[in-house]
Length: 436
Image (tube, helix red, strand yellow):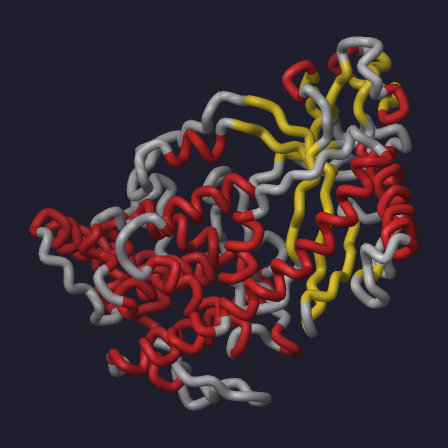
């Protein structure tokens, strides 16, 4: 079942060799974008230019597909002076239902210079109107400034014809999309205004803080809340940058952890993406799987080689596909597979096919996907992956060690972990017949 070690490294080597060129494309496009945003800032100083874009570049280099780059543009607002008020179901001015987990940002102090960005909103818990920061007004203002800045920069020959396109700017979008030419490749940037606010570092309920991560990384990643538009009147908390900060922290650990992400993302783009490489599984999903695997497999012994590291991500991904539930790493009550159920069954089939026979997939091809038609799903593996338990006993290291053993890639020598696997197997043998 094991693929030849050189095959894993050869496949990975091609992926890594592309990153330098991708970074060059990104840097050229970023230079053009920064020129544009500097012009926006000169016209409206409340829109700030953040030059620390290492995390966005880091993510772009890792991702195999040409996904849009999310770029948060900070606002010159003291977020700590704003009050966060929950959006009720029918609080929006047009009486449309608001999205779950959204909020208003109340402007408490008059004379803050935000009058043109605020509006009075009926908030149920206040029993009347409250002056709140309105995302729709900010987005409209930023959109007008971006168009003006493009014209201004072209007149001054700061931008060349074809460098930038605003054709994707839409009236109803919660992000402002620009297409920017980086050398011969066009990159899409989704610009999102963001209000930053200090908050208490996140505490993961029932989980050991920083387990598997460098000490203090969770606190550093979550000490600041980022609010981005959720609708024309409501905001939502964004975990985009906190997740990237955690991913960067993983990169400082020993072992081919990010290489595992690179390899699976290439398979996602090449073999698991459906028509035109588009499917239910995204790079963001795989990032979340890597973070969970870092917590659930905290020992350096788990990350000795590329094959074993990939399987640490695979067993978690397969579990999530089989149960159609991928919990958000920072907000576990949120299911990132919500609404994707119709495509998950076929996706599960392809991922399990790779897990049993990776050699058939570890090569580059064009056009047709790697053939998996002759492969038959293993019913015992499927039953093991679909075990359910309300106490979370099938979302821990012992359970995923059991899955690694099922795929014959469990080489851990830790006696306590091996004992935990033996005990869990005895329990599972009793439960599988009952759940069937």
